[in-house]
Image (cartoon, rainbow, N blue to C red; front, top):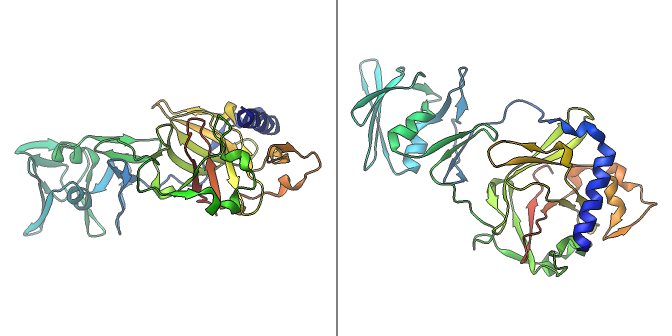
Length: 317
């Protein structure tokens, strides 16, 4: 209960500092790279990357996707005409570079976008993967992600995510209050994850999709943006041999993405740092100089976690 009260107080302080302008936050820079996820795990492309063309079609490199799905890819040339074939146990696709159509299991289908050769890779419209290889495919416009296959998220409960004992993490436990569950019991340890592990489910609770730095369109202050299927969970910045810097969510800034996920926003700089291990220190002025690059980890606090804490290696360091 003490932990919950502190989180609410920290959130109230954050909102009062930011004011009503937090209702609008925008990501800085150009649109993010298109990512392809196979069964919720991001695929790695060694050279040519997926992209969105001028008319909005999502184009993916067919060879890497096909081979990841167990299909074989063949290439042939008849004069100046280049052909590509994709063959799996149940499906056959024949394509010609430069055409907008393909033969899928013997039936001609038009995709409205040319099958193209770029960086020595054959790129095809996303829909061709779905119809040609019989896979469920979704375009996630919020994350600019291509979902292929199932959505059975990995969990931090999985054995691949090892438990680090708190005694081995003691350089970051000066504020032990953030390492307690809702019953005020100390966690047994912490699971450390990386941004490349996202999306991931925290235990059997929330799914964290992404973490980014954005700027408030009103105040121009930096904020941490976390896309999740939960609303309002707090976070904390962990600094070696220092107090944790807890952050309540800026609830007025929350954005419902309309796909059972939402954007939660957290201030980077907050007067809530006057709370040091649960005690309020009125005279502390160092909170004004905090920079996110000082943190080694970001603690993803979740009241439904009752066995361990989850910390993500700071991707902004």
